[in-house]
Image 1 (spheres, rainbow, N blue to C red):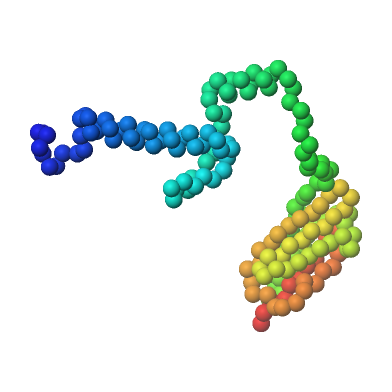
Image 2 (image 1 turned 90 degrees about the horizontal axis):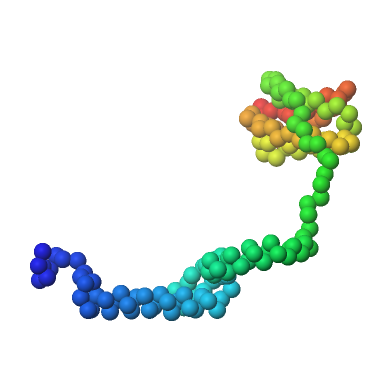
Length: 170
């Protein structure tokens, strides 16, 4: 390929090519020097360009100095709120579902639960059951495929078994 070939790609071997590379590097260094004055994370706008950025240590020497400094002096504990530890055990109750001609019947095993500690909510086609006793929380979400009639679920609790009846549309 000769130098006069119109299909030839840009030639960076001449003096003009080196000038373009040098100008591009100069622009890059100027942009990076702008970042030196900025915090380690943020958003920078210049010449109509927007850059979101996040930097780690600025140099390898800085990174090594930070690890040496952290080994020399123990870090101060920061005032952070820790999550409260809970001794509450969350269980999913054993469930049976029966599709009767006029209604859907669900049975949940909830040993030791009182009726006032049960929350049963029907939201669209999802039945949510929550029941608490002592240090146990029973929780179960059940998908109901049948078209249900409007109205609240009917509940009855006997001997640790909760019976939930949901009427179907006719």
